[in-house]
Image 1 (cartoon, rainbow, N blue to C red):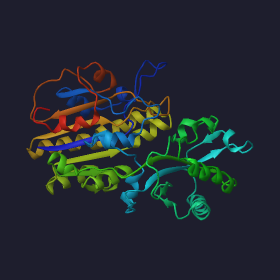
Image 2: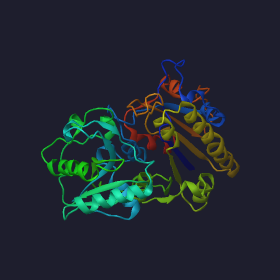
Image 3: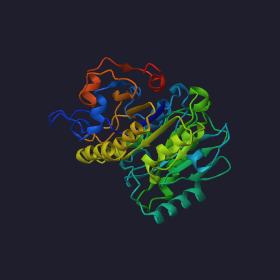
Image 4: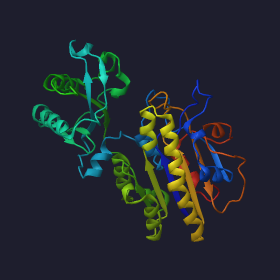
Length: 383
């Protein structure tokens, strides 16, 4: 049996109240998905706790089969992908470049924007150099990531230093209520405040520290499940997690369909594919664009994979799941349970579903409370 797992970032949403209660998933043209749905187990899985702004990184950790209780934050994995390995006693933070209002004292400033992906590479390099030269020391080290990411390593830091809010939570609001809180946050608060002084002339004029993490204690995927696995993704977190789990890691740019079959030919048992293009459309508020990305996935990836697996003559399983729900009309993630679909080629039992979307999943009798249990359900003989 060969297994292919497709984790589609932000695929799930919520019915639009003023738009006939539809979702991008329900209106997308997805012929292959809906054909498989007729012979699949469909249900809901609670991938995130009741958080206001759930993390897709924690969800991906659990969807690969790791107990979410062992999750210690996601900032470590992109560093691991880059070959930067902090000590076990170190604490790693994400740092976002944000734009704060300029007139008020620091605590009274308003978060005007928190997205820097459209910043020119030259300006980002200048900002990083300013931060590194003025804020680094023997205890705090800044690391430049890919895609204009910045990480902060607190050497031998406090694992439970305090509470850190992602910058999106403070958007269009006074930052005072969202600043770090806890017994050991003062040096980090000082860095954030100082950054607003040294970056005042840039388009992103402050550094926002959040997403504290440390190195988790986990086994390899093969040790846990007895299967040799691969990860196909261009998302640094997913790639770093795959490497940390002892899996082969490949790029989307090399061709998802080809890579899946190359891995199976090499003897791999299970391939995880993680993409975030649907998430990106959701965060831009592009409902129709998200629906088109779902259709592209169905037409250009899932359909040829299913066709080639059928032609191979070997039994196979397909699992499709969203990591988190990101309604396009909200432009942020929510903690709703998300739909999943499990198809096994050796099962001819009809599931009673004519399509796969949030509504059919909610109307099924299948509900999984612990997301790390979904992969065991998928690879078990009884589905």
